[in-house]
Length: 496
Image (cartoon, rainbow, N blue to C red; front, side, top):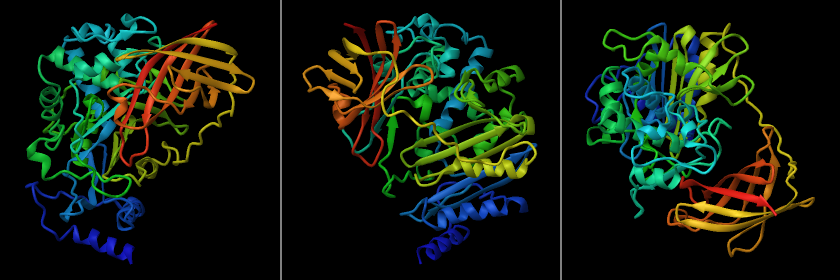
């Protein structure tokens, strides 16, 4: 019964008048080769997996398919369209990176200069390595030494978003030497937001509008949610299938853009070099090639460039893409520059998985170049530590609020740790990865104004260096149906 009702709602999207967006619906039906995938998307909505899905495909400069299914706002019965602004989460990153590249090509910044040159009085703190090595380029490809980070602020909470300067002061800390490892970091793209503001002498939102959105004819794209788009946006629905309160973050350069599938096709056309007549050239071919080159390795055939994930397929295609995942949002933008292909899928719920569907579209259109999608299995983690770090270690956990004494003991039975006056605790799932970094989970807490907002556990990522052990301890919020935070501090221990 639920499935029939959902299907009826999908059909009604063609009949119900839309509010807000005054332009045409602009739905373009897919070619017959994609009809099965269209049915899969329709079923994703009609089976109540997600409130809505919007899809776009462009090939060789032509839009082959743009369509939306289901409700942008289920309560108000407002259907999604190809022009509905969705929260696109981390697809914001390649847009921010494109803005950085524009500034670099204009001579307003140097990609290989220390990012601190453009942060003025708010500088990254060098706990590990030298901040001089944390270049703009390394922030772009997540090898700057900045740690894991996200921090959400909801309209129904009293805790408000701090300034970007204050967030950098608290969390702009190098927990590993620049260049030592790839560590995906939202705070890094928050730093780039500040770089854009200082280098362009305007706000991040204004520069993105003037340098990216307007020249690329992305009419429904903004940083944040201005009043003109509020009535049109796709509501974010959380894990419990209920609307989430509106939220913001202290890493807007990583996550804050709203855009439509039509606009994402426009943005993707820049990166596959098939700009339309009403779009302007905003980057040189050399700049685009630099963004698409894998500069950090994350797997045998995968890595990260300047703002983009990069994956090489055995059949020949190089996939340049970025996904997005946060409360009430699952998104993906995939491009294959050599084949002039752009595919995007936006969901305003948490139960869908865009990656497989988008790769299925690419494989269907390019069967000789793009591998069939397959689930990538994660390597098994050993149950106990495998690093030569036996003995007792002591030192400090350094947060923005101060220092806490830490003692860790390692023997054949595992790891235990004591933070300040808290009881000694075991380190769960302690193991060493292929690069020699030590991982583990601790059921203890960090006492700061930020972390005290929610119950949390601690995740450790430490690097052995002789009689020194150092790295990040990340407080991960727990026990809520909506994302809270991942806030990292620096830990350094010495062998006793």
